[in-house]
Length: 264
Image 1: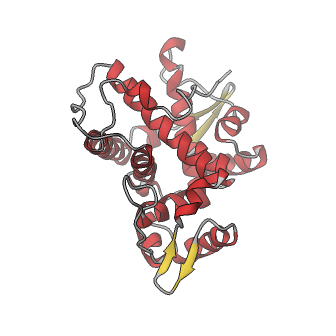
Image 2: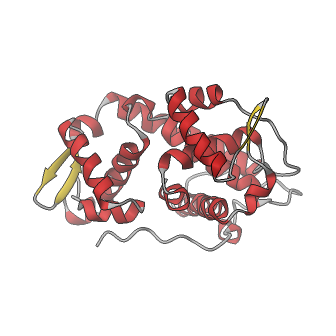
């Protein structure tokens, strides 16, 4: 999600663009298709109010990243070359490649590459967008706005990243580190953290912030993690169908393996 925030300045616009792009097809492998999507359909797929989607879509239209017609909203093929879109698309693609590399390094079973099919990174970008959207869809029961959901994901990741090396269950993270990881203004992060702390979803400790056990270990969180894992398996299977080199994923990077965010 940080890739989308960096490119669009807002998780709202990033998620709406990704959903519209997947509906309209400019990142499909092969010839691009054009299937306009309605604001109602986007709102339903993203589980967000119609007015929120309409307002953010209008901002994307004003920025030249969406076009409106009688049939609905569409993502023009030339938008692929827009620097903002290319930044998000390339980063999402390479994060997906890093995931495949890590899965392979952990000796998890992957499908065999499909012989005779040349991999087109556009198809990989589309699948990376699908995984980004699945992350939100699988956690819809948390009922947070996307900024707070991004904060929860970032804090949970940071809590777990160094927890075992520190010999504790969760390693606290500072709000300033979370702001840097996500590329959000500190004031925005601080304001939303206060809301999450008040709601009992985050807890302050002397070293920073940790996810509360009620949020981390709830049946809903376990269901969301399982749903996302199953969706990720499906998407990795689709990668094999479009010729992704699952036996040598490092060769598929656009800009190279993205480094993990620094927590120090």
